[in-house]
Image (cartoon, rainbow, N blue to C red; front, side, top):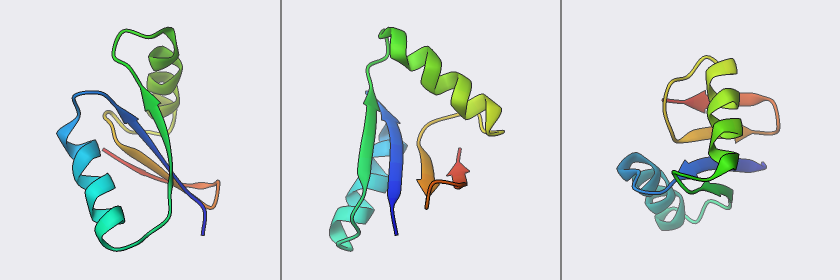
Length: 68
């Protein structure tokens, strides 16, 4: 299963999700965003469009979205 985790800096929930995946040997890709980068606005728009309000957001198999 392909998993992408959208994370940002200074996000304790993002860190917890990544720690859980690492401890349980679950492979994932991370899309990391710095708070003041132009790309973060694109990520925030994606998150809002998906119906979520916060990081992290997990995308499973390219179509199932789970987030905060």
